[in-house]
Amino acid sequence: MGDGLARFLLFAFCLLTLAAGCAQPAGGVRSVEQFDVQLALAPYGSVQVREQMTVRFDDSGATSFERQVDDGGRSDGIQDVTASLDGQEAIEGSGPGQISIDPGDRLAVRWHFTPASNVTHVFELLYRATGVVEIQGMRGTFSWPALPAQRPYEIGTARLSLIFPLGTRILGSPRVDAPGWQWANTAGVVVASKTQIPRTEPAVVTTELALDAEPMAEPRWQTRAALARQLTPAFIAAGLFIVITAGGILWAIHLQYFRRPGDPDGGDVAARREVARGLRLSGIVVIVLGMLAAALVYAILQRYGSWAQSVPASLVVVGVAFVVAGVWFRRRL
Image 1: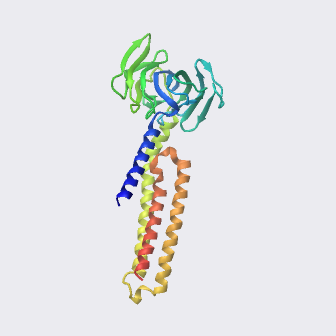
Image 2: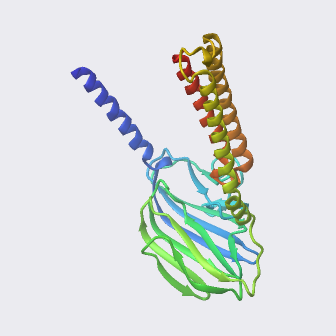
Image 3: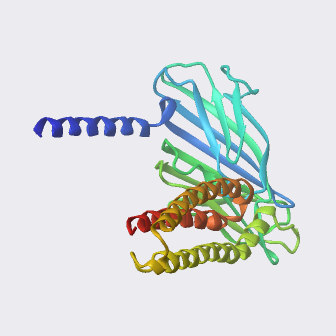
């Protein structure tokens, strides 16, 4: 028993050590010494983003650095992506001085460079996000994640600049969802700065705009979000209907075949055995159907929120209930 416990503790220690190693900043990143973000809001609700990151690498094993851009679901898409490394424009590729771009749900840009010890690189990223202003009557809300959340590195100094179109009227002062940011307004540019930002601290900048002088159309993501809220009761009702109907079917089977075990009025044993077997098989089929439906709904209706999975989830629940009922009825033979 003692040897077994010792082996278990040793195994757990190895797992914890491996997890701690995985939690360290990837690619030999020591720290991001400077992270500058410039947000230039353009008419018609798009924003031109310029990011410049000064990154210190502490070993010669680092060959790349990656930046993932998550818009938080508050844009219609990211386009016009360009990048540079140490002041030199980079082209797409996997060699030193080149970049890899993955324009999926989250834009991912990876810079490649020659490995070297104790070296500092400057990474610059430019892109344009469309439909970033949420419309509420004549008021618009601009909210953008200026710094990546849950990043594997700390930031020494961050500087955030907001540039608005000429004639834009700002309703209130811009704000960041984390304390300690110092704000200044220089030549019409709103600037916020902060030092010693831990890796777990996000930075989402938000500001309200008056749209009387610069009308904007409602972005697609906002329209989809409103439609998702309207469809949520229908998704929930459909799921409940499936579960309640299945419950009624099981109750009817119980009354007809398994009300009183051994009672000849409840049907013969062979019929009961066949019903129990049919329930188990039907349950397995319904579970598989529910999983396939979940994948289909995710591919087609993901934009309408997680409640769209109510129907596939109800199918899985019904399938499990059929299997359990079939096993239970079989034991009552």
